[in-house]
Length: 147
Image (cartoon, rainbow, N blue to C red; front, side, top):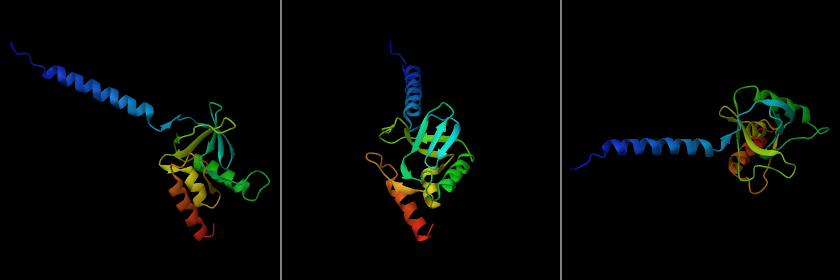
């Protein structure tokens, strides 16, 4: 008597697809979708869960430096425009315990936008180089536009 394994194969395939989808979702580089509690400055925010996030790949003026207020205000405006997502690189924490991330609002990377506006400069620290070329290109364009 020959058994029909077609039904078993379909169930096995569906289980495989479901488990694969869950693993992809779990390990996807976007996570920790939380609200912003406070904007600390142009390159640091505090999430509603108390976590401090330092933007990867950029540096903005500190207090008492030129354009500090502008960078902080623009960071705050960008964050109001959609849903926050964090994307991590190789290191997820800095020496001060802050989370390191590329900060996205919908499909816009805030890190890059601040550079494009001339309010941030590229500041790459090894090993977080995922968007090095993109951020460097943004800085080059901002310099050409004399921003």
